[in-house]
Length: 201
Image (cartoon, rainbow, N blue to C red; front, side):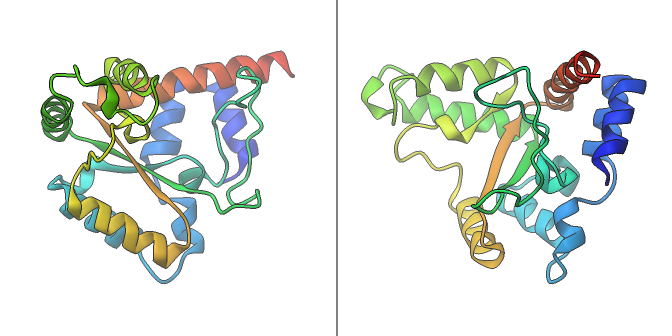
């Protein structure tokens, strides 16, 4: 997958076309270069650990494309398109799980774990509670902001740990309530990339 083709499609096609073509279709860059384990087996193991269908698993980020489409942390309007494994540390593998049932189950468990969100001392950082809430409003349960000692499940953490050992890189997951929220998060990002490409010629 070439970055030049991605940029060309961002300029010439609708954002939903780009998201469907590059994030939902085709094989992932990482599994084109990783020969020991198939993308199918990887997704199958994650799906089984969470009790979801394999079709509800999507690899995203630079592991999918071969380059990152995240904006720069210091300059949100700038997209550096960093290549996979281009930095000193190995790139993470980012996995999206799109499951209404799993999303709702996790919210109930979080509610109970945090004593109805009343217990403020249970969070790793003061801002994590607010950050988690903001992402939930976007239909995305982002584990970066989960409270202390909260586990999505023992099975998924075991699978993440096993693959971290095999691949020598972190395996991150995010849980989306539906395809609507998943696609629209990425569509909005592609819109910003389009504006950036137009502005920078």
